[in-house]
Length: 301
Image (cartoon, rainbow, N blue to C red; front, top):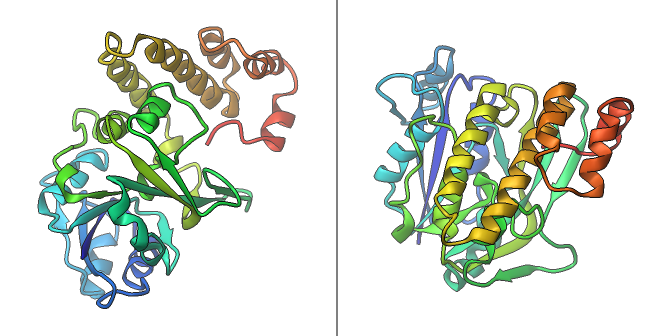
């Protein structure tokens, strides 16, 4: 069995070796499974390429900087020859047993995911994100996770990109390249009409700071509008889920502005989100008390 690992890089000189070493140090390589590492650099301007050359790490490159990881991901997908595929962000760090832990379950479902650990570099806090405690495995029936993502539901299967492993026959599901950084539509297309499993362990660490793409203002804007566009494509087939997803998407947009202390924008999107006690609380505390809320709770990740 071969597993293809697609790693996209851009100006990653400070973290690239940590990420690659965590992948190449997987327990069982060459015995339990073979590993194909496909590295794609998006025309870095720092020392990333020099570090790769010095470490004798072969890599592919985008023709010009594409402004996001999606073009590199698609290059990697076209090059992948593994039985299974997983995609890595440049600031992820795998546990040594990540692949070994999921091997027994790969042939039980089309898509497999895991939990992860989020570490915030600005304050040192960390949170384990798993779908369920005190259980080894969760099974999700056909379309369950698709509908979870379409409705922007927080509970259920983890679908953060770095935790997904899927078979080679789904590799022709490519990422959008217009914005080059949005993956919401890709996740929906991947999970549509599919069964899936989650191994309820945190099998890698995701490092988060203000430089992360997920916190980038330009990315958040593009993600919001492309997600609206994606949702609209499912409106006739899943009208109820579409309505719920529309309001929750606005709620997510509101919380992004809330944690960045842009309260006028936060209130604009909150009034277009779901009417819940939590959204009411965010709206009221946007006038007074938001700093206490953001210190005590994970408002937006």
